[in-house]
Length: 471
Ligand code: CS2
Image 1: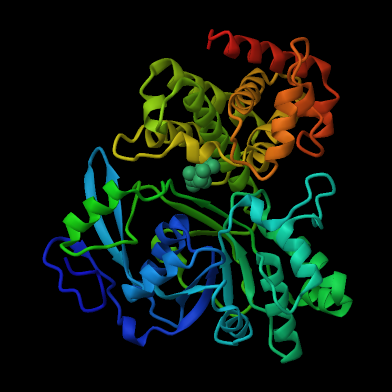
Image 2: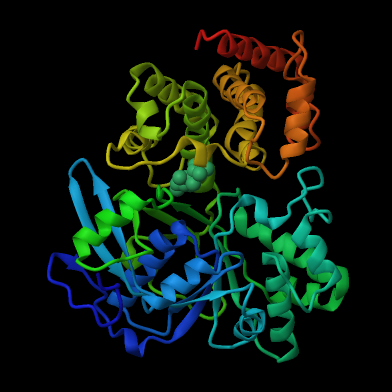
């Protein structure tokens, strides 16, 4: 069968790029060419180019995998996004990515592009663990493998921060303005965090560069949302059947998508509003809402699913008792939020229950369960602190925490960058205070929780119930 490419002639109802791809010039460098970016920011950019064409093509960089880049380039940067729900399915070919680039094979080209004035925005989806954020200090973790390497050898970076610093240094030396850095990972105040880390890394070798970045740089925060499971053979086969050609980079996702962005760009931006993006002065209430309601419940569902042998989120949601637990957690978490402009939070929760239950989306609980130490602080623990401070008992948060601990104890091959510490905690857990070694992992839990005996007892009580099979 033929492969998807710029010369494919489609027959079925396929939505195609409605602009002249040959005239598309690059303006965005995206780092982290995974499924999420391709089903989210690239789709918004496609909509923006359709409504207001401009030099906003994307060069998609993968920091680790060269395969994804090769496959995408074999298809002239094209791939399909299949949107599925109980109401039906549709397929769109996305044209906003001009080409892919593998950092491990083309470091010099990547450094050249970062210094190229054509590139005005660098967007990022590299997952929480890639930044090298020290959970204790809140600054740079100098022991993080790529942070360490990039501090020692700034001219030949391997990590996200090293590349950003090297690119910004070239711009400064060339008398150019910085590129805007737009973080799209699930971290609270993500722009502010990345700004702090970039400035700290720059300052370690070049204080003048750090000053320049802090004066001239722009790091708007953004909240991103769309459920995009990793592609499977089955999902690729479905796309191929819909397209009539083979697409090795196809993705399946839900109809829902959301992007809320602080409108602070140095040298312009695409008209992402065309795809429904919302521009606001302060993205924090939206981020908190999404992290504590969507991602918090998602993690809870994932650990529950893993403990109960349920492979997909939809399987967990198909058990009424578990769907009720997810809803109850969101009803508890919502009390820790401030009002979110333009959002009816009750409706948002109803929508989440429906999204999680989408019978056509196969989102593995195992995928969401990974990297708990990187996810739980903003998804569960921050809300716990606020709930307790408001005089409530944070019981649902204790339950979510106990689910992770039970999962960690039962999963020796746990997928987590702090795996050794988590395994050691699991091995040390004693019957009288089984969560204690987890609370002792440096920087994982906020001090307000480490010092709260009452809440820790609640975690232990929940853990006992879970391990006895009572929930
Ligand atoms: C998920 C997220 O894998 C995970 O941890 O909770 O990737 C989630 O699907 C997205 O944030 C939805 O926008």
